[in-house]
Image (cartoon, rainbow, N blue to C red; front, side, top):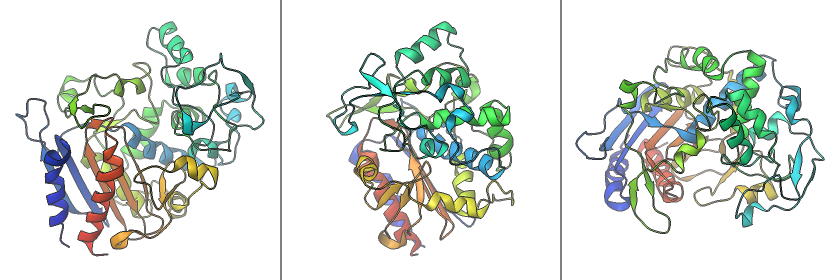
Length: 393
């Protein structure tokens, strides 16, 4: 194996894009085969990036939530084609906005827009595949109302109940749109297990895989907060990267007690890596802990989108991919041996997760720059290709 090109590329990211810090770790068959860190953990650039640095994981949280849901499907507590209203009754009767096209999106619709009653029920599979018709309007009047009425303490279940009052943007099961679907799935897990979402994850994923540093309430512990890597943001229509002001990034934290199944976790690269490593090895962790059956993990290697859904999903950096159960799925063989069935996702701050169940390889790349589209269209594909070139698979 020769990862010199990958290392050179990671070290070039600051000069090329202005990325202040990045960390990349590759595992194969539960063994670390590559690790490289570059840059600074603080805004003043006095503290070199270290392995103890904590990152806000944003949408990389979705892979954790998908795993939790699949565990409940394995255990018979939940079924892929169940109607959501079986678990969350407030979703039985939903309204759909009459005219909304994701491709000409200007604003999320509201209950004041012309609506009709949904012709189709929302199913669990619709939530997992982002085809349920939900929006990603975290600033909706419904969510602001539950935040204010609860004094900013509404629970996950209470917030998700308020989401049911928001109009759907299309009929369930007809189109793809990135949404709050995985946040709703976290509430489903709470209902079927009778546990707070974080408690369920700790007992069924984090502790079995020895993931000690992942948490939702990442800023309630001064010692933990001091380890959070400096977060930046891109400036629209420029190449500038500046310190984050929280306008975009804090919108996922609807209340201080809310545990977002779609974007709420923070953690270290070492800890988070344990999950994609397990999924790349048939659902078993480094100590042999089985978090999912191998046949269940294979469900993550199957795409779901087709037709209009595929056109909705298409975006820079997604060539060769469709969307599956909460993950992108490779549908054509890639360069340097990236196989059909490779899956994973990314995050609002530029993290990138890759799970290769064919070669038992996983990769987790983390940076901390939000609102930076070139991470998805340029950096992630290049990191993937150089990783596979280095492995000579």
